[in-house]
Length: 510
Image 1 (tube, rainbow, N blue to C red):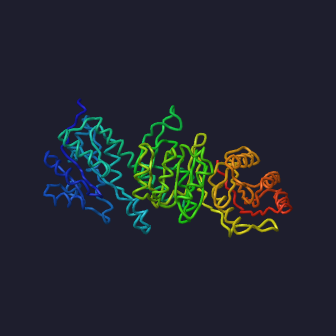
Image 2: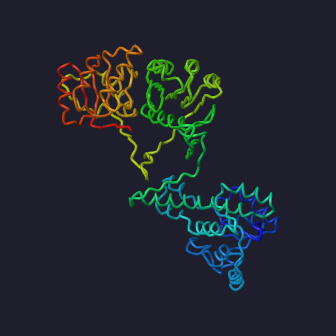
Image 3: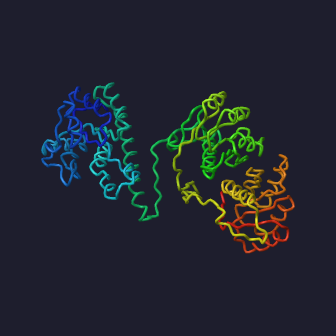
């Protein structure tokens, strides 16, 4: 038997009517019988197209306030029958069940209703029962039925109708079936996650409906795909396609800069997910210049991000540097024109959107899920561990350094002075190594650490770090505390006129 099927009838029951009119008109022009319900039926009739109400087939009206319309053997029998099965065909005739070859459904907008903050009863009413059942039935029987399961697929189906005049191949029907099961599984996942906010069943379910294949993954021999709505967070103005590594760095940049939202002009330069330069100044131009001074070597090929509009003079400076991505809430017209001077340079306008509150990563044969570290250390959190209190300038620099430290790979030490990142020790296996790395790096770029502050992502189990820091000229230390030997580090600082504050919050980042 040929896998080409000529459709003779269609059942249409949709929430969104956008884009439906051309399909209904084409079905009518092809002489395909249309069955429908409720608002969809009225919509089609208003187009001047003949439509048979489902109630005429089932001999049952829409009941229970519209909750039950299509749930009937005469509907599902018409969809689920096997057209090459003689017994099925005989039963259709016996029970006067019409054959249905096309099912077009668009589900109630459950996720949008949840996102709108609607009352629970309104949300519950947007759990589609008949629609989801029609989708599953039609997709299951793809050998004979084509299932159009979302308004997003209307255009593709309309094109198919025009090109094949109502005929579909097995490959066509199977493709639409795959789309349908994607829709149904995503829908059920959203409903489960809504209910599980309170129930807390220990099951992990996530569904993202869009994906983009990347050139490759972390390395050229690895495949890579990004699943998500990139356009919800950014408007891309210019440049090549973002790579897997670009996306990881952009994510790190956005999360770091979220610490400085609505603050004075702040500029950061990142490399391999860590800040290699960051400064706050009265102008974004000076913030960029001083951020770059933190490590002009690592800045090559880096990710740049600003918390305010990038202007012409800043763009002129940036243009001298080879960088992969520049991110800002906006660019002046002159700045945009300058930065577009490098054809591959990626320019992103960051929108004011809420970032996810959870972090997910694969682990062994499963996944790890945790709350994002949204705790930002503040002056109000601090416990003054030493008798010699930090100055206001030191306090300000310590909070500044702590914010950077939170977004740097552990073990880490961050050195800062005058709202400028002097150096970081990143991803080291010991805190002493991280400190020594940061001191050596600061010296290589001619930073004077006298009066600088030190931030640590975790406590000091021994006083060796504060001793090394003090010998380098560091005058104040911010750390979480929590070691049984805290007092040893505190005592050393007190004896050597180093101010120490404790935050009570560890910021590991693995």
